[in-house]
Image (cartoon, rainbow, N blue to C red; front, side, top):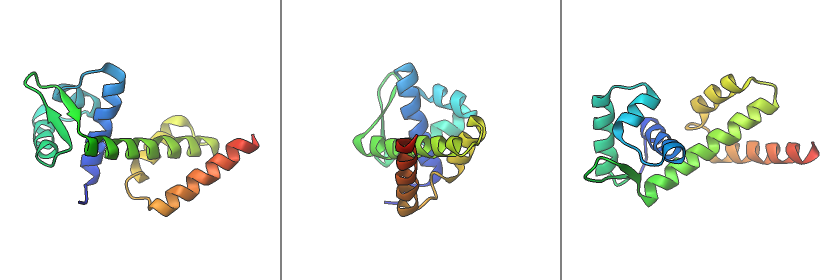
Length: 125
């Protein structure tokens, strides 16, 4: 099943917030992403219906196994790309912004080659 970039962004944000603050609610996601609460509610409903998240009776959101896999993969791509761009001399803020723009569209092959190159470069340093 193909998942859209926006859904990947929501799942990645849930993962990041879970690591940062523990329990995550829709309002936390809205604040983090600078979106309205109603738009987050619609997105969370779609993610829940597609089996990527669970929402308990208190409104706390957790990732399912499939949601966690997607979120982890995107977050890993983001970190690798950000670090790679910083190693090229790009400032951290711009590197993170650029990584966010391309992390969803980069082919698996290209990402793996960037990752391999970055790992080799870090071994040389």
